Amino acid sequence: MLDIFRIKKLSHLSFVDKSALSIYPWKDCKPGKTSSVTLPLFESNIAIVSSAGMYVRELHDTFDHTIKGGDCSYRVIQRNIEIDQLIDGHRSRSFDHSGIKKNPSTGMPIPQLKSLVEEGFIGSLNHRHFSLMGSILAPLRLIKYTIPEIVEKLVRDKVNAVLLVPV
Image (cartoon, rainbow, N blue to C red; front, side):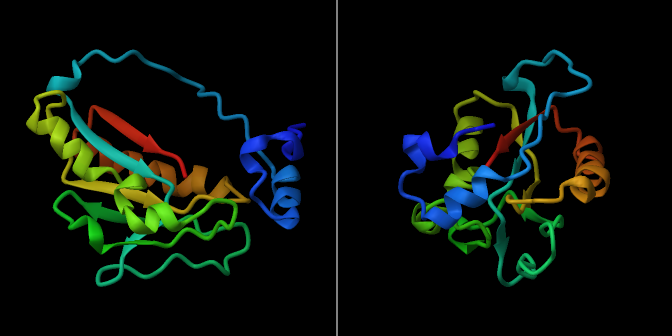
């Protein structure tokens, strides 16, 4: 088991948060199937999937923090969003939210990827991206329903690569 109390990076956490993390049901997420990248990035359509719990107040409901095991829904974030419209809706108290509140692109790096498109490093930025809630204690619904739905949309959009932003 991970000795969470000896990890220096978590020394800022309260005893309650450290205790919760020490009993968190961490999952071994080894993929059942892997594949190699066959298309160069400069020809690829890239999408973002973030667990930052970002949403747009005018377009979305907030994530529901009362759902036992965690809210497994997602929010679609359009490529043309003004980054300051993104709201930090993450429920976790185990990280300092001040950075993501000050600069939402740390959780949904759309401006950074737009720059990479302009530089020709990546081919295109998909028209939509996906924001999920991190801190899912009961991930079966996420794995069984949410992820396949997102993957279906990514396939339909002809996305070649996904930038995963874990928060």
